[in-house]
Image (cartoon, rainbow over all chains, first blue to last red; front, side, top):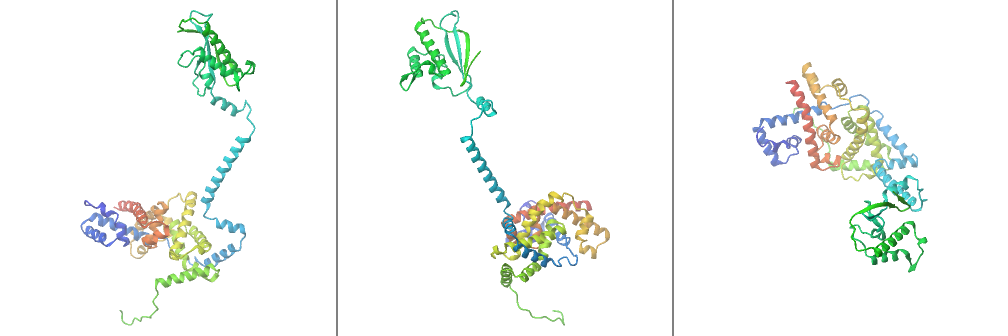
Length: 256
Length: 210
């Protein structure tokens, strides 16, 4: 096969089939006169066609089509007079993929609608249900408060720190509590403002007993901190000894 | 012209007349003329059966498929608009039905390869072999034919359909494109791929002969 045979390889079939345009046919004819390999490939294509034609299945069984036309016509006539159900089945014959697709879309729509209705109007789940457990696991674990005192002075200056537990979504009131994340101490005025914000409702002071356990805990901590700040000397605190830790969750207070 | 030969004059028959005849036949079938329906089946039954046989390789399957094809032809005849010839339109139905059926057929039964004896039983020996060749040559050529047909049966359906329509049924590229509902360029590429695959089978037998 000479250089450039690749350019003619795709033309051999159309050449044999008589489907090559004039110019290419002329070029290929010239090439075939010079190139034995392409001539042999052409012979292969022709031989292939000969084999397929000469050895193609020919059903020479006598009477193969006896009664065939009559049978088909009779069946066709019978089909025409069949029930509406059969007519419908024939009409959708060949539409099976459309039906499958439509069915899938309809099933998805119905399932989604049903799920939405259940979520919107269904009964709340029990606390010991799997769904409740999943909700609890995915909810913020709570806020860890640490009661500690400055090292070397265990009787005084008990402070409360909020330690991040790695979960997001801390309520604003608590996240800014007492000592910030950067351990920058809050001023007394800020603490008083926090306390006012906490124990007032619609502009009126409410009893501590009316607060939720978490809010009450925070209020007490704020009062402690305000008291501590008022009694505190200007001695800086750098290290603390931990007395108690509280994990405040949405529903309970756990002590450790 | 040889002496003594007589030529009987006949009326010229044009393609446009053939189209008109087909169209009339279609109209008669649509209104439920059973004689016209029977004529349509008789006119095309051999063509449909042979194509089905070449595509499926099983006479009984081909016969069943032929029935299904004509039933479908009668069901969908009102949709025939005459944009292609009736022959091409029927080819298309055969190809669609065969494509559906061969998927199911191949999954169920056609995983085995065609034995030489089976091929000879189904297809017979090559006509030329029977006339001229020596017994060992006949055997050799039958083996080659069996290999080619086995390779054909293993081709993807689209390639097989293209090569059968071209080599056995003698359709032009344009007619194949219409029958398969594809572009002429796609016909060319499918034929080229089919021929490459089949020539591999042919070459294998040539090498063994060598």
